[in-house]
Every structure is written in C-alpha cells, then in structure tokens.
Length: 521
Image 1 (tube, rainbow, N blue to C red):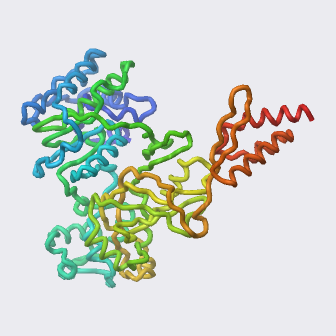
Image 2 (image 1 turned 30 degrees about the horizontal axis):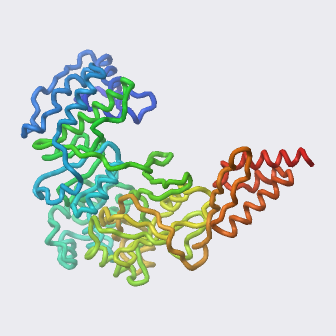
Image 3 (image 1 turned 45 degrees about the vertical axis):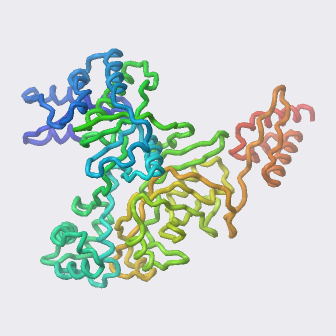
C-alpha cells in the first residue's frame, strides 16, 4: 500500500527509519521486508536525498550509550558472528540486578521500562513484580486503546440526545470528576466525536466509539512510572532507566540471519535508555508456549494433556452487557467499578453455574467477592480450543488474573435500559491481563457445570502389553472397557468411531488389536 501511494501521488515525501532497528521482518513470510523496501525506494526515486543523523540526543548518562557503537554496523548489514558476539558481550557487561523484587522502591518520579525478549516473558516478569508489590503497567497491544473512565461515569444514564459545555460541567461536578478532568480538554474531546453546532450529539459519540475510534484526547494514560513490555513493543520509545530481561548466553543461535536478528533486537533494547541501563536474568519459561494462532500465551503441565494457565487479552471481557451480580445490581456495579477497582487489583474468575456448557464456559469476574463482569464468548472458545478434547469438565476457577484498567465502552441503549442504567449506552467495564492459572479443585452445582473429560490411559507397554485402564472416573473405565470389547470383536470402524480425541495416541494400538482379532474370526 505504501509503495502504491508513493508511486501514484504527485507530491514530495519524507521517510524516517533506522535499519539497525529492523526487527519486525519475522512477521513476513519472505522476511527482509525492511531492507527490500529501502532498496526499492532508492531505486525508484534516484533523486532521493539521503541524510543521516549523526548525533544522539537521547543519551544523557554515561552508561546508557554503551551499545551505540553497533548502530552503524547493523544498519550497513555488515558483520557476522563476531558482531553478534560483541553485542552479546556488551549486554553481559551491563550492571546485573539480582531479582525483579529489587525494583521495589525504585524512584517513583523516573520513567522506567523493563523490556523482555517476548510477551510471554513480560507476563512472567509482571507476575513477579506484582508479587513483590511493585507498581507497574503491563504494556498491551498498540491498537488496544482504552477510553477514559470519566466518560461513562459522567454520561451513563443521561436521558438527553445532546449536551452543551455547561451540561458537561454540571455532570463532572455532580459525579465528583471535575477535580481529575480538565473541562476544556473533555469538551474538545467530545466535540471531535460528536460536534453538532455548539452542542455535542451523543448518538454520534456512541456510534464513533462503537466503530473502534478513540481519539487521543480520550485514551487513558499510564498512571505508573514503570512499564513492562516486550522489546518489540518498546521500539521507538524512550525511558530514563531501562532493565533488559534476556539470557546473557543467548539461545544458541547459529544461523547468520538469526544472529543478525537477535543482534538488532538487543540493540533496540539497549538504546531505549537516556540515563541508566541494567540487565535482569529472565524467569523460568518452563511450560510456557504460544497458541497455534500465536495471539495468546498458555502454560502446560507435566502431562501432555495438562493445561495449567492461559493469558487474558483485551477482548476476554463481555462488553455488550453492563455487569451485575448477586450482591450489586447494574447501577451499583458501575459505582463500585468507579470507586473501588484499580489497575493491578487481583481478581478471580469463577465458573458461572448454569452457563458452563460443553462448548463454551462463562466465568464471573470477582473482585473481593463482588461480581464486576463476565468473560466473553471468545474467551470461552479460546479456552476450549486449548484443552484436550472432548472437554467435559471445565476449570471452576482461574486465579492470578489482574485488572489492567477500568474503561468506558458503548453499547445498545436498549441494553442499558434493560439493565436499569438508561441513557445513550455508556457504561464501565474492566479490562483484564495476566497469565491466569486454571483450577479444577472446586465442583459447582447446576446443569453443565460438572462431569469429566476422558482421562488418557497409559500407552501400551512393550511387546503390545495392554494399556492400563483409566482410573479417574467410572465413566472413563466404562469407555475403556467398551473400546477393548470393540477391538476384541474385530470392529475396526467401531473403534475409529468411539475413540475420543484425547485418546487419539492409542488409536493405532487399538486398531492393530481389532485387526488381529478380525483375522482370528
């Protein structure tokens, strides 16, 4: 698209870039997109004037510029294993921190970034910081822009189609928001979305927010001075102090292209600081892996079928319906979200009795035993896709989940009216983050809430010794005996039909047993 715009347009243009920081080629199947694009621009536009910035205006401290020597070399695509080792050695010489807990009490007035090699590492480091009481923000996707909560607080339940600046001032004062929101900035932000003469049309505001457009003036700003991020998400940003989380010995890279990529990634990490630079050994990643689509991190247990953790993402909370629970109605829940729920608070997801079906479970989001929301259908399906099929018993609780933020969302005015909120369709919802731990220890009453998926039996022993029947439930034992009976009867098609996906690794043994039995018959 960029190439088409540059060739079709009859005007000048300016491009900025740093080849030494070209670290996104892994997203393209054919790779080297940054280098190929640079070559294309220089070939297509021979009159292009190339200028280089020769002075670094970011670095102020002596220790923050230790990796700047590598920039020109990496940008020229020169070097090899020896340059990779020099970059790695530069990283090893950074001042080491003993543990994530050592960041407790870090200067609150300084901007600090903890940058990790992967988003999975960032999740684990964030857990360690929370456990140590270190206030921080876990940086999410660049497209995930949460709207300021004051918007829903002030406009929820407002039964008028348009408002004036005076109306907004009265609303901010009524809900005690005027002390934290600048009236002029708030009015300008609303005018961007719904300007209608000298007033703001709230139906336009709702429609444009529903389309996913959140103006910069309404996007929440981080409240903590410390940010935990992947190196890729930190690219282009600047912090006073940076802690780089990476293995000092690397990952055994041997191929030249991988070495060059790792060198650029480390270079990006070590050039984010303006004052001071440190390193921290990464936490253990045992059991951590990415889903097949690559959009979610999960944890597996010691058994091949065991799943112990799942990452919470932006779309995992139901935004279509205002939250309500047994202790608080929808209006009281809105008040509770505004007054009591804060970023970093721990919540528990508890399976909702009566909604845990065989296809898609739903979980209540509990904050100090108050229900403040419910997980979305997409989360239930994501959870189901990662558990060994068929799933007949879901985790009853998911712990270790944190509040990322409380944000304003918009929805159907009819839904707002049905739940007692009224108004044009503004309400507050919670956004979650973290690596939730799956817990099956409780049993819930209610339809669809109990049962057990088949427990994989032990594989056949040497010389075709029959596998031991599963022992976790009577249902599993009955199923295993039925499969053995089908195999002994030589019913090959019956075995194929009855073996559940969770036992697929035993299919060959059972089929062989059925064929042998069929030959005897």
